[in-house]
Amino acid sequence: PAETNSTTGGRSGALTPGPSVGGDVQKIDVNPPKGTRDFPPEDMRLRNWLFNHFKEVSWLYGFEEVDYPVLESEALFTRKAGEEIKDQLYCFEDRGNRRVALRPELTPSLARLVIQKGKSVSLPIKWFTVGQCWRYERMTRGRRREHYQWNMDIIGVPGVMAEAELISSVVTLFKRIGITESDVGFKVSSRKVLQEVLNCYSVPEYLFGKVCVIIDKIEKIPVDEIKKELKAVGLSQEAVQKLLQVLSVKSLAELEERLGSSGEALADLKQLFSLAEKTGFSKWLQFDASVVRGLAYYTGIVFEGFDREGKLRAICGGGRYDHLFSTFGADDIAACGFGFGDAVIVELLKEKGLLPELNLHIDNIVCALDEDLQGCAAMVANILREKGHSVELVLESKPLKWVFKRAARVNAERLVLVGNSEWQRGVVGVKILSTAEQYEVKLEDLK
Ligand SMILES: Nc1ccc(Br)nc1
Image (cartoon, rainbow, N blue to C red; front, side, top):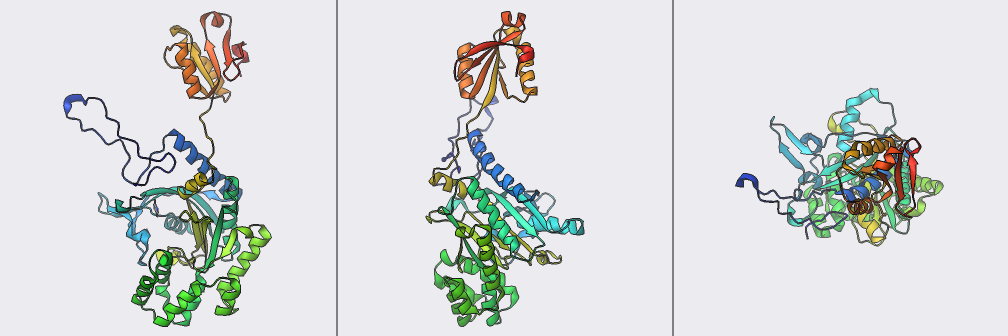
């Protein structure tokens, strides 16, 4: 079925608008464009709950929030490495004949802004964003064309302390929303493993990204197809065999046997697992040589969050990308980061029964009992609002039955009634809706 809204499920039926005026108005489709979602209030509450956790964790780790245009120059994303993200670019020519694209990811925008800022920003740069990302996929697969991604990136730190900090921040997020290490884990590897194998076979540097993108498909397409694509980019039969063998390595000890003890890949991974041990999140990590991730620009540690029941797609993913900046014509700078989408995590929370109960709540509903007291009711609402109390002000003359129904609908705590005789005595009526307790309060004592 077509991908449905991630939280309420199902595409809303198109309401049939009333008779069109003048007879020539075309009835609009009230659904959002294919592959996109509306966020009606109940979905927006869940989204805000999740995004607030993203942002609070980012602040806990000392990251600063940044943002970029959803629309970017297409040139940011036209890497020639056979990536799916490139094949599905939501790109077009604008009215100024410029090639532009709805961003499919946030990292190139980050690199653009870091380059733009140049020496005016001190290192390390620690930025985070929660932003909508797009892809244009033929609806044959009926998948979504947009999602929101939380990104955290550390620029200017070459050591794996940076990757440890990033993984630690995602662990913190998981803990905050009730996910434990028995629910999810992180598969961790390093692209330097592949680099070291390719170096043994003198595979030129420029092929590295392409090879990684092909290998990332190892669980998605038949291995013979992988072999065919690797040979097509110029790898020898032996190099292909060796690459596929090293991907099935099951431990760092075995990795050391295969690659020797002096390589950077092993050193980085050992250090990362040691830091995880010291920091207290090693139970969340497992070495998995088959993890390469599908973005061409990763160069070192790569990781992905996965659900241990194996029902869902990757929850998040990231890694080191030390050579992205030079692909934009700037000096390279050490960099690592991750992306964390807003959809799979909600599916996981549903699976685990961890979706939070997020009801609308209003402190007060204020109602005038007579038409000519509307202004007084608005004054009462203002007094309460200035003291920081939320108020649903009844804006039209309504029967009390309607007011009580509305109070229940907005989950109001208190009903404040403005009546003639009470107003003459300088008081208003207050009713606590959960207990039916009621009393009068002087205007000046309202709180
Ligand atoms: N890159 C990307 C963009 C949008 C969606 Br939905 N998935 C992946």
